[in-house]
Length: 263
Image (cartoon, rainbow, N blue to C red):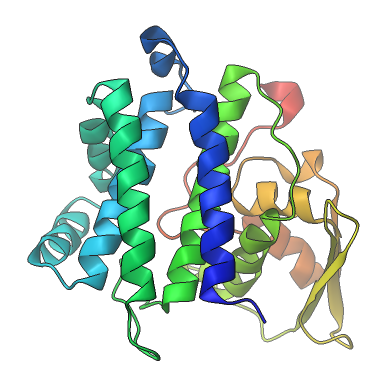
């Protein structure tokens, strides 16, 4: 069974890896564009730091979190961008320092949540372990954006399992956010980890299946790769459709990722 401490250790490892990539950068490289929407390296790190701060506020039931919920409801398409922009304006060294300190505060706050208590969030309330897993998913995805923009090849670690897990657990949300009805059909998912281990979810006798690379499924679920460019395969019409909309993160899906050949 995966414990909160297991997840927090993986979160720190994923965060430290990204910090090692960005901390030595010259100031001008922090302006490197990482997404089609124009987010820079600074926006990526700023977003992670901002979300850690919001998570701490949610855990402590700080009035700042309630204010953030209202702001998000009033500006659902721009709220996240505004937070990233605010943090990205910091001097790079100060931003790295604030991000590192913030994630340490978050780990301590998550450890202090009473057993069985859920944490309010912009989506459904979450357990401390689920919130820590969501932070890995975000760090992994935004770290991939940064690495790709800087010409870095990220090592393929089994930490991507956390991303796969969220992508599978949020299957129903992927339909909901697109105004579609989720089919009442079970899907068995069997993915091969970078280490070679087999990860499975869902009933073994499910009528439909998804198989392939765990790392590639994580890229697909964070909408960093087009389905045509990953080693992930479906058996069954519902499983096949799910792979076109799978989404591990909350909020609107955004634009579909381009095929690598079209970039």
